[in-house]
Length: 185
Image 1 (cartoon, rainbow, N blue to C red):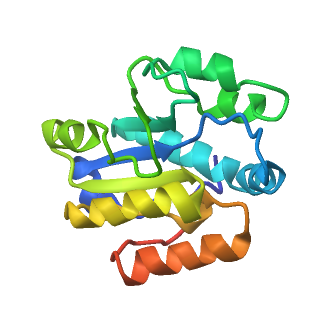
Image 2: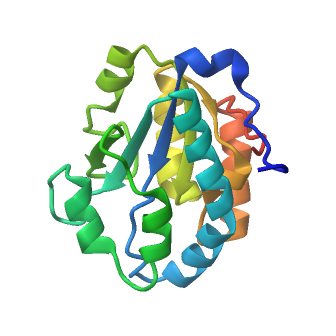
């Protein structure tokens, strides 16, 4: 595409992994209307990030809520979550067979998951994080990534929350406290 902006992270590509948080979502909860609206606004940027990673052979790791299924099978999670609200997002961003897919029991993608072990095995020290909800799951994941001493790029145009103000505050914390690059892609 002519106007597509490439993410500005060329110096870290060899050590990078893309982390998509809670992209497979049913949007069936209180406040989901706002989150869905805000997710639709960032959808083109999420697709751009995914395409960029695929072209550069950067590993993509999906970390998702388990929805009570407790099986790290993205097809089962998709089947459970797919509905009229979520179908277009899932269709555009669902994992491929060569992507990694992990489930998480709580907000952080690191809490009681094998994410740290997987990143260590892959030799990845720079995380490019995107997804929903920015002021909860991405924020908690960024806090843990900072504690593990990962460098982070969390593009502000690849993260959505129910409330724009909450999203902006989370980005502020990730940039100022956790030293994340929040420059848009």
